[in-house]
Image 1 (cartoon, rainbow, N blue to C red):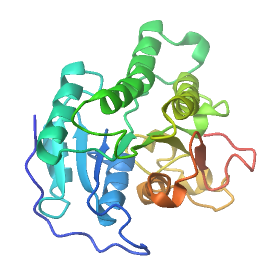
Image 2 (image 1 turned 60 degrees about the vertical axis):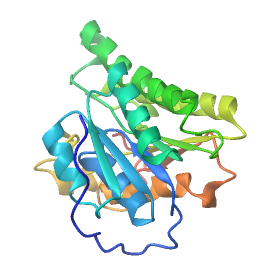
Image 3 (image 1 turned 60 degrees about the horizontal axis):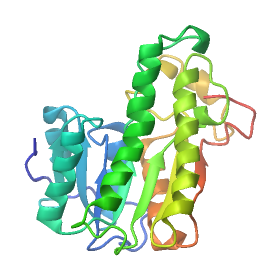
Image 4 (image 1 turned 180 degrees about the vertical axis):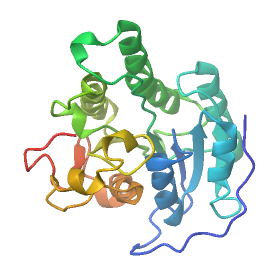
Length: 270
């Protein structure tokens, strides 16, 4: 399902350099809110036409409406649905004839508690959406004949997590899936070079509805563990992704950029 073109005026970009993505097309999954929307807004503010995907049509349409007219398109569907992925790539090819950036941001965590007690069906779902879903989006972008992703020297940035590098109480298996994303990033970087660069960003707690249970009602206490004394924002992650997707990072691939306000350096956990 395709949402309408956006109609609102562009938010005033602040602290931005040159429009590094002028004339380019970026696809961001899981982009109706939170980190995904923050990434889409940053890439768009720097000149990219953005294609947003998300599961709920109404929320996606509201997100698209926040972008300048003609610079954003929303296509609703489940990220782990092959038919949805095919629709997205075909639509991008038909409307824009190219794809330059793929940002894989879809991630679920339907369970909370000790990893040893996790329901195995829930574990399979986490791996299917977070890991295999990410790989499927990459496969679709690379192999679609009309997108020219390799020819355009495409860039892939996945959203991992610090939970993938350090044990995180209550969200242990989610961390396992994000560790897989980080390793998948390095593996794909080796396989897809020199034409396609592949990197990831690993945030700590970012102030979104997805992470609300990790800080709601005790934000100051949680932030105290961070050397920078605050939690992350979607804008923080958008800036990190924009760097990795830009020509400023042309000699960087196979890296996982930790964006955590210093949490891991200070011995903290997500």
